[in-house]
Length: 452
Image 1 (tube, rainbow, N blue to C red):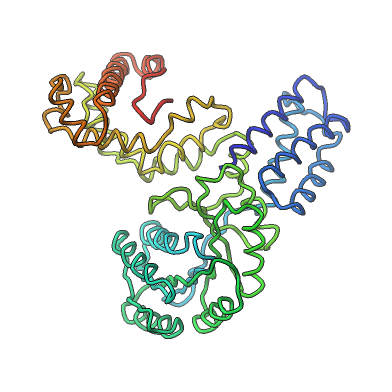
Image 2 (cartoon, rainbow, N blue to C red; image 1 turned 30 degrees about the horizontal axis):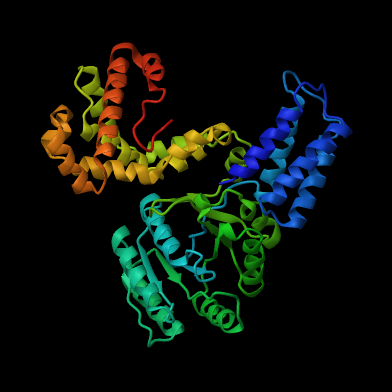
């Protein structure tokens, strides 16, 4: 997300190097680049105009303080303004109402409403320790009901059954009554979507909102629709008392215009962003951290939080003890590391949070491929326990069997074997000489999908 915007802003800062202060002339040149970067990112035109005017006003004549260069001074101004338009701070859900607190999910068809309902249920269950029930009021798309039932089972929350022969209001009222009986803390109501906004849709969801009186009415929108995301959110906001927005599919959006437009156009805060297909891939929206990502400074705070929450510390300590004793780094160890990385959203998500990620060469970004990681795990799973522990025994006939079992070519097995050997040597260096030796040995030695 924000890849294109980060690259353009990075070039703008470079152009200001070597100049003693921010003058009217160099500010004009820089702002022209910033304006083009924002427009290319599909930020809504009124937002671009207001943002540029505000940056110009605050940056003109801005003295360079201490060791700050004009580029750094402009970055500081741009950062502050980005945070301002996206909301000064993260806004969480208000679940202080008498249980069950009702959350109503609204949005167009295809925006990711049902999947986001499952993700939100998992987040409330795991992070907030809430007992959650979900229900689908989408009587026009039977697959939506079946999909939500499966997601509820996957994430371990209660599902209230519904059918296409019922009215959405009857379903919602019955679900609310059942949630009270089961002492649920939260009831999340998934609603029907349409391909476009229409009167029937708005009337139906407005009726649901009146009947349920939800504590949160969240608008779910596909971030890849750019300016349309903000316009659609405004249309829903004119009908419903929205309390917030959830941006989905941000991992596939290199522009990020929706994130910069929605708050200004709707006046409603972005509360979460969906950053991947996995059910755990729903992040709280932190304007300051997002601004930092846009400006190429990464999001180390979120990265540390993810590592703290999702890394299996027992496995990490076990591997550290194993390496300290001089034992070999085997295929099971490699698989564990890859699975841990996937639990944190995958390589693309991790790289997006690294400082300077936008400046990484394309060759590195292209290797940060989560499909390759999944393929490598499949190869290792096709090995016998003995082969994983002692990869050296994997020769011709074994390679052919593993290749057939994992649906790859023998040369893919050879590549993994070679890279595993290089990684084993790197881990031995680390156990003997610490982090410095490991970093020296890392260059070009990572397995498929981890080409950092």
